[in-house]
Length: 99
Image 1 (cartoon, rainbow, N blue to C red):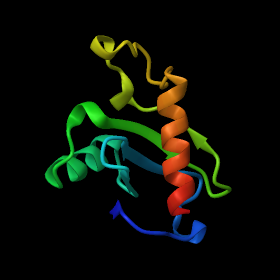
Image 2: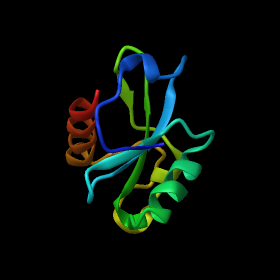
Image 3: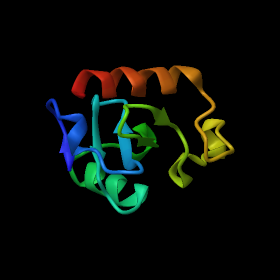
Image 4: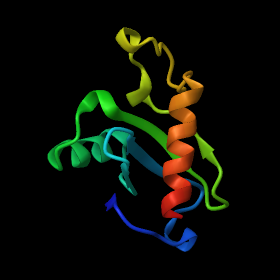
């Protein structure tokens, strides 16, 4: 499901909900079985792959920035965790806007 308007915390799954942010368009997709499924949904909606970053949302609103989708040596991210604090901050602001 692509999130373009407010959602309720009750819509989040336990123990966590997988999500992918499009930091270029300021939207995200959540609730997919795999992060790559959320990414595919966003790409079908016109997102660019280079703008997509995977993360997880916990029912209390806590985020972690770990996903196979984030392994991008060409972009300077060589691990599953997003190392760029600015990208993490952008995702946090995006999620706050919609939760």
